[in-house]
Length: 316
Image 1 (cartoon, rainbow, N blue to C red):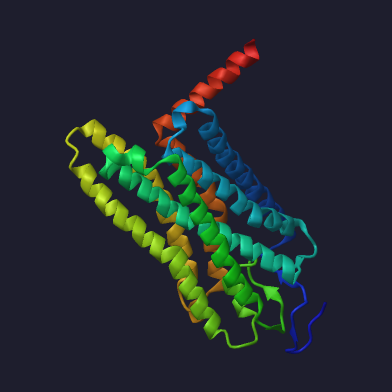
Image 2 (image 1 turned 120 degrees about the vertical axis):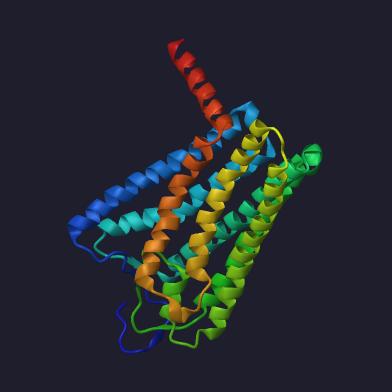
């Protein structure tokens, strides 16, 4: 549907602009991000499989890591396949319903991941600061309850925010200056006063991003204090290694998200935001399995044992 003037329409398609480059460069981008996507999926699915199969990894930390990787798989599948298709497509139209659905799952899964990262920091806090009560506190039922709360919170908050955004009238150009239906470029298309919506976005992002991030930082202050009091250098190194990967992932995830979402609309730079969004939707999800496995002797040991079993099975 073509729009004329500034007439409001709630049933017109949006057009995802993506990266306005030559056809040859679009094909290069497609190949690059397809490779990254396959690496991301294989890395996270490997973590899911390893933490399910290996008996040595049936602990709360790996229970949360397995579910974090599961969320990451879904998170990338919400964004990347459509982005890849648009690199090769002649028409980049997306219906309002599909756009809202993509935003809903993007916010829901991103929110669930934020809450789950905070839960994982609490798990490390109990393991290092109160190790004698770890098995009692982090029971299987309690871990499942924490996971359910993290996921339900993300999906519930996303429903309210997505509904609020897509109740606005959109007029004039329906060109989304982004590679998916993210909050800032959609707000730019609204023809009504968006100040109330901006306040709502700020409050929701504070709830999803800032509060869990502050809880993570507080947890690691106590964790660092406990680690520095460990006398044995080997024990101190082991305790630090179990936390370093999680802290690195948290800093990457929250750093990019806070930069994009916790600021006023007047400071949005959509071209710059697209580049930052590429990092947290494509690059960091690809790096997470490497961060968690390269510094983790237990994961590397489990992978080695599984490969040995596969090799023995093939030989027999």
